[in-house]
Length: 454
Image (cartoon, rainbow, N blue to C red):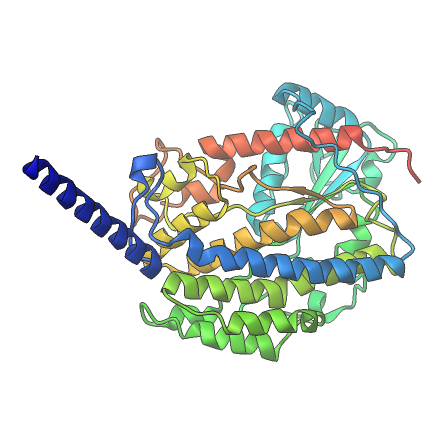
């Protein structure tokens, strides 16, 4: 009996010590493991990121008030009811293709936004709805993408003028075009300097490619938009390994070169400045949060408000199906241990982000952490804000988890071609599911749209 009591005491002491160590590890952000629950290793405690949701939700409340005031002074009152619900089963892939080809007859589709992921969506649509026996025109570069036929091809002699929407006005053919516009800058003025002169973002030192699109998209039948995360500044790549002082420079430049509506979020930005920092991963998440609320969100609101007012061109919002395709997470590498993050189901959407930030920190890849943190933040904002403007939001996956590598095509890390899981997403197993989900959602939306509305 005495020995048993000693064993129990020792067991309780060891259990208490183990519990204390777990608390310390979670508090400090040191590596822990979810292996007992079948989850991926996670070095960043989820609780360390809870403040992200709180600040994003507060930012949304400000955006809601601005939208309400804007709607009161606008001639457009889009009534938005999403046809995508859990009660409506998705059509099979073959049925979705047939529905899309039927609905898109005599219509044009514009995809406007970032090269990643929207250009890959453009390529995926071409492959899925390619006319039989036709040879699609390739884009020399994404910024010079011509129109392409969908579903049915019309005779188009080689060497003739490029295709145009007028080619399908009185036919059953469909056309699609990708327009490269990184920030969705919506000016209808063809003489706007942003379209005619090289423009470098003063905050990041990165060139921003813009193309005229609002007037052209106002004449389209379907518009699909995307705006990706802000790129890491060019000067960050000159820093020595482990040097994150570029985050300080970036935040100072974001204050100096603010967006027109960033003052709406001044109190929130002050709260971000006062946040404690326990790790490099958290420091990068804070910086992504500042970029999101000071740059992305004000710019997004201004773009949506400009489209709602549609000065100088036909109305887009509420008059035609407008969709926003979300951005997927990008793994820090295509190595199997990193991609295992995407093989699990998560109860908390912060979990995959924390796991990706952990991998990025271990691989000394702050640029990837900064990018993926923005992906998560944008998803939370877009899902709740876009419907107010009559825009359908389509996340790449229900959990917004991006991709899984095709192991038969993956090359060893360190070669020049080790990014198959990123550069050709829809060819991977996870990407195939994403592509099918997109086609089915698009078919559901277009099939339920009232095409007779004025």
